[in-house]
Each structure stands twice: as structure tokens, then as C-alpha cells.
Length: 123
Ligand SMILES: [Zn+2]
Image (cartoon, helix red, strand yellow):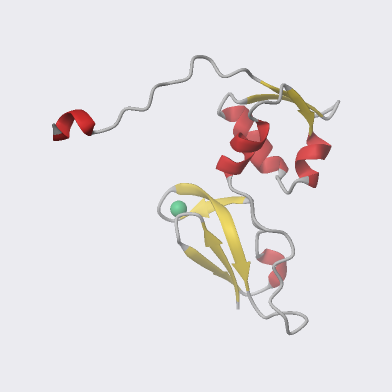
């Protein structure tokens, strides 16, 4: 049995490796509509636990593009970010993706939002 653990902790199982998504893929989740695969598991192919590519989280993508103004799809993929994640970032309005040119323009952050804490409620 092959498994995929989603970011929310839901574990999906698959009968064949080919059906199993890869870390970073967006898959249907029975609790949240869609969730990102964080880890995958299953019968190890070489006896060793294969953790070839460390799965990336969407927050890591945000982190990575911060401070940059432009990058390429190729560079993002080389750093372990999947096209789906890049597409999700575009949906979130973080980047503008030109797939034909392979260019990713990073949108400037408009006004850093102050973090609201619950300090007021406590005092
Ligand atoms: Zn979920």
C-alpha cells in the first residue's frame, strides 16, 4: 500500500505507486476540498527510506520569493517547487506567471499588514 500524507494530516492510500501523487501535488482531500501532499510513503524500493526530495510547503514558496522581483519556472522547479505550487501562488496573487516564457514575476507586497495579537484581550 502506498500512502500520501497531506498537510492537514489526512493520510490517503493507493494500491499502486503510479496512482500516488508526489509531495507538493494538490489532491482532493475529504476534509478540505484540496490539500497539498506533504509526505509520501509505501514499500521502499531499495530497502532504505527514500526521501529524495524534501517536500516543499506553500509557505516556503512565499519565503523563497520574498525579496526577489523576478525568477523563472525552471529556477523554482530546481528548488523543489512544483508547477502546481507556482500556479497556486499565482491564484493567491503573489506572482504573475508567463508559462510560455517560463518567467515568474513576483508582485511587490502591498503594505505589510500589522500582526494583530490577542494582547489587548488579555490586559
Ligand atoms: Zn485536508
